[in-house]
Amino acid sequence: MSIIRNLEQDILKIVNQSGYEVERINLIPSSRKEFGEYQLNNAFSLAKQYHQNPKEIAENMMKELEKDSRFCNLNIAGNGFINLSLSDEFYIEAMNTIKQDIYSNIDKQEKKKIIIDYGGANIAKTLHVGHLRSADIGEALKRLTKLLGHEVIADVHFGDIGRQSGMVIYEIKCRYPNLCYFKEDYQGEEEELPIKVEDLQEIYPIASQKAKEDDRVMEEVRTITMQIEQGHQGYTRLWEKIKELSKQDIKGIYKRLNVDFDLWEGESDCYPYIPKVISILKEKNLLRESEGALVVDVKEETDKEPMPPLVVLKTNGGTVYQTRELATLISREERFNPDEIWYLTDNRQELYFKQVFRAAKLSGIAKSSTKLEFFGFGTMNGPDGKPFKTRAGGVMNLSDLIDMVKQEIEKRINIDMVAEDKKDETAEKITIATIKYADFLPFRSKDFIFDVNKFSDLEGKTGPYLLYSTVRMNSLLTKSNADIENLHITKIKTSEEKEIFQLLLRMPIILENAFQEKSLNDISEYVYKLTSSYNKFYAENHILTCEDNELKMSWLALTKIVYDANILLLDTLGIMVPEKM
View 1 (cartoon, rainbow, N blue to C red):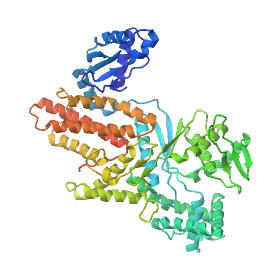
View 2: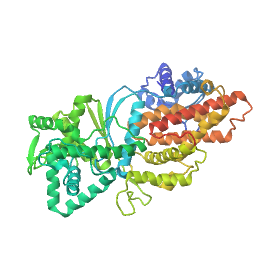
View 3: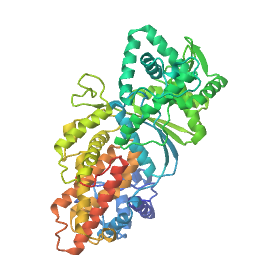
View 4: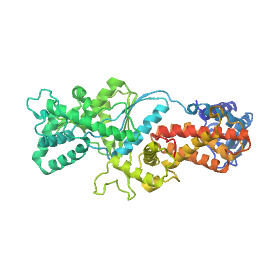
């Protein structure tokens, strides 16, 4: 248990000893530090329970608290708010515990097995800016969930089947009709693909345009798509090769974003489970015909908004996203037996997942004990408040966005001190920090504006500011030539130190809040506040030239704690820290 939670438990025992039964104590940071660093407001809820004046209850509680040497500056404000501060001795012991092991300042939760479905890249299409938030937020939630003690399985869940497969193969067939995969008597021959990743980026748009303009093309695309679903040998093998080619490109962009998955699976991996989906739905009498399609009614009596039925099979017998989603659920239940499955997509998918979850629970495809959760996110827009577009008006590729930000970083931040062979890597890390930190500042479900000029600045609430500050802490520790690992905090001189200590004690609460909300804004705000507080302390105290050696060593120990906290939190956000800046 973290130091702050242990302290709250101890206060709980003290309060109960004073004759009042309290279930939980929360030490609330005070906004008026001159009256006390923390505030307790339990007297008000106890007043109703015990039919006593809250101020009288607060006085009785305070008498017991005064017996504990960890508490000082105890006083009562208003009608029953208890103000208190913590002793220097307590802070020194607490900070040395954290310095010894930064992970001791984290409250582990009861372990669960959680599958997180994020990414959602589409095969044969390059990643665009619409894929950014899923990758960023999903990766950070995965890391946070692991940090808090859970077992996590991350699945990219490629869109690797459906209309795009028919379109891409149609266009390749037009260009290279003599490929062995198009032979009527195809018997498993292999042939090198005549296309590269760059070709895929223009093949799909061209095929899509053709299909929109010509019904005959669209019909052939539908036929090819259906044949792939039915296992057409030539088309299936060709599509497998296209998928591998496309995955190389997609994995490269995810790597730039410092994003990785445990499962690089797609919709097509659920195909063996589709017959089971249909069988279960039939056995439970959940399927009914609607305009030639088979659907499941998922409307509930309490619904206040329209809830359409879930389509399972199209009029031609083909599957749809929903069918494959249910089949994927069966696969996950049978293979992993998870406690929870989280789905992370943009807010517009909420209705879709409501339908799927209800059908999964009605049918028993998902166990009653398996918690299915949808976490939506808002869109990232440009300075004009509209989604990022290319100059031609199309959706901007994600790699182009990264390169655009990188060019701005290289113009604004001087990295001449970095070794020549590390300059590109450093610029890349600063670039990704710029993008990710801006992404995490707003609450997950909110839209936000990404202004390259604003978020690439070394000053203010930005990724580069956090990286520069963290690198400077490390540089200070290196220049000191001190035995950093064996340093301890032994004295406290300034109020700025205490402010930093109070922030460090709150870290486990911040992490817990972020987990509960499934949003990274609390962590983003916290790491900025911690860093800014340290920088204020650093500016007002000349650490390396301090004549009091004991104080100097104590300040270096403080620096190491903040540095370790920053490294841990930035890593949780998926942000890499360069060696130098």
